[in-house]
Length: 164
Image 1 (cartoon, rainbow, N blue to C red):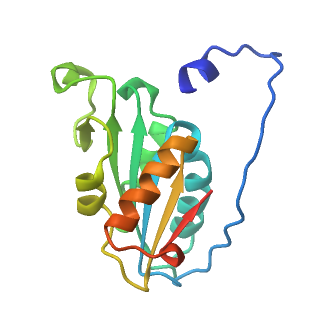
Image 2 (tube, rainbow, N blue to C red):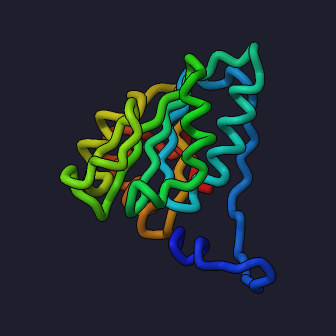
Image 3 (spheres, rainbow, N blue to C red):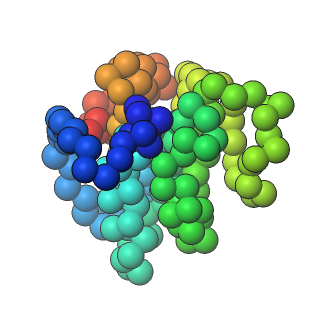
């Protein structure tokens, strides 16, 4: 999807569907928010992240796990890198179609995992299930389905995650 979007020219006509889901964020409602995003699924996550980081009174900690096919495909990378300066935001980039041998273009300080998001990674990277934890999910249908399955196996209940 990301490479397809990059091929668009000014004036091209495109059809959209969505966004789906209605998520209303309340400051400090959750102590930790975990985010699982793939490709263009970063869009709703950015809205939530920006809202939290713009509110000095909001002490919610955010951890984003963001999957792209290639490091160069990471959408809004400069914005995400700027957000890493905040004490309550961290990001792990997942690269699915490159190997560690392709590390030459990786920016110093970036946390990058090579491969697909799996059960072990979700269990390790997402905050542990708790009433003060919320997990947000946005990607392809198959990505969303896999992430929800991994969360359920990890002990999350449906009220602990939200799919855009």
